Image 1 (cartoon, rainbow, N blue to C red):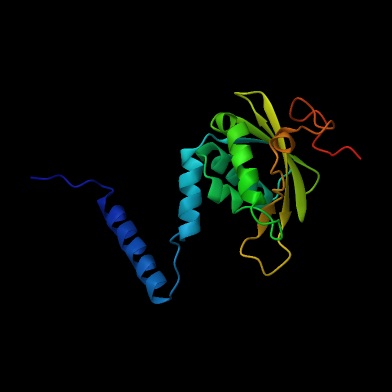
Image 2 (cartoon, rainbow, N blue to C red):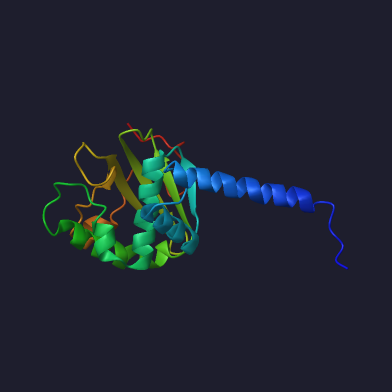
Length: 184
């Protein structure tokens, strides 16, 4: 004879409540199921080294910086170039993406710290520190101006390798040294 757990009536009631809530959600047209973009983001998040953060990113600048690092790590030129700001000269984002991947791909596959400078409601300067290679890369992220396909974009106008790998003199060698404030 099978002995019933004293918790079995509560488990059955919980399962019934969950099934009822799911049915109501379907009938009401509500869905908590993630969309394609959320599923892709979750896969990317789980498939890459976590990004360390210094400063105060907005949701948009953090997500965009993560995507830059992930696409660079994956060597995905087309997806990286797709993050470019509208109006960038034809072919320049792809050339810039190739430069970034060639220069920073190895570092992007390891630990990366992103320092977000100033506040990020409209635009934000982000400095990426690639720990495995000791490299530093500064990028600029801005919000769309309306009518674009995406909410946030990256300035990608570095078709020359020297420009892509140059480090501005104001950037410190270690994250947090300026308190995440740009030099005036």
